[in-house]
Image 1 (cartoon, rainbow over the protein chains, first blue to last red):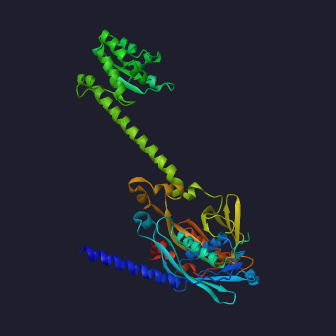
Image 2 (cartoon, rainbow over the protein chains, first blue to last red; image 1 turned 180 degrees about the vertical axis):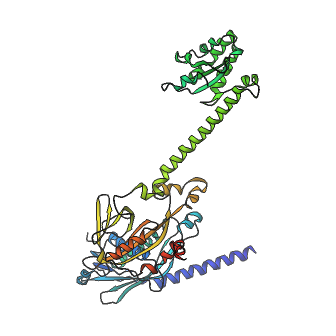
Length: 173
Length: 307
């Protein structure tokens, strides 16, 4: 009986690890060598998923602030900025919400395990001509401490790191 | 009732112990002051009761000093044959402060219906109740002092003009979660905070959306500390939440760049403010009558309109 349980657990672990590897392989796109000096952030779209306005705005603002904070880009343009048209090398970040679960801060505080807020966002980096350079699914969540809007900060940090790692020009030493 | 109360009326003197001495057990009540010979002032603390001539009201100003002298006093009193006075003095020191004390020795001498006994018990109960009320009042004041600014942010930090609001994120040059006042000044949406203003022209606002949210009553640094409170009390405090309105705007600057800003304010303040903004030239994608927050927030108000 005990041996059967151990074997089942081992097989389950192997399967989970394999699934994780497959997902990672699907997600990972070989980083491009293209480095740019400017990035433009387009307002987050949520056509299929109903996303509250405050989350949409918080995602957008947090993303811009994190990109500015990470550095590596001379300019971080906002959606609709006319100055972006004059940028020589520009990458445009489109973000589409694929999943959203609004949790509860009270549940998180009281139970620790319930009430998680989670946002799944598909990020698409394009050049000025509309050619896709990089696609990635990112997730923002707040599981323990903080208000629901903290999930947007979590996403913004990940997205900014992704942009920085793939497109930011190395700093001149 | 007691002539000795005259001493208590003197603002310069506030007794911390008082009890009664039965002079019938002593040959010479004048010896009582000798027990408390530490200070000259205390010699005036023995007063005869007008109603009960054999009862003396004793009020001790410095009981701790008396306690130190207890052994010597005992000796002196035994020699004088006034043990009762010493016992009373000792028990007066042992009992709690500011009470009229009828000691077991003395109370045994009174019948149950004795007026002085009833009176003393009544006085003690009043003083007990007063002490409880005083403690509760102090505790209530302390709680309000700690919690008040959080529960009633509008009352604690009333801005000079406009609606009290917190800028969560978005306004250029304003830190996250900045408290201030939101007002309409001419054709601008103005956020005033610590002698600084941030203006957004209403005509540049493309979208105004209101919503409902809630936040912890205990938040900020205090809220963080409560998370580590023992025995799960932090979790219990998390149950205390206050409802708030959120106001989200999207606007474009001179170069056409899209900005967004989120404000939180007291419940019921966002919708009227949105109306004012729309009247001032702002636009919205969700008209006020169709907004779900309207119907969710005030179901009672909607019912009231029905005949």
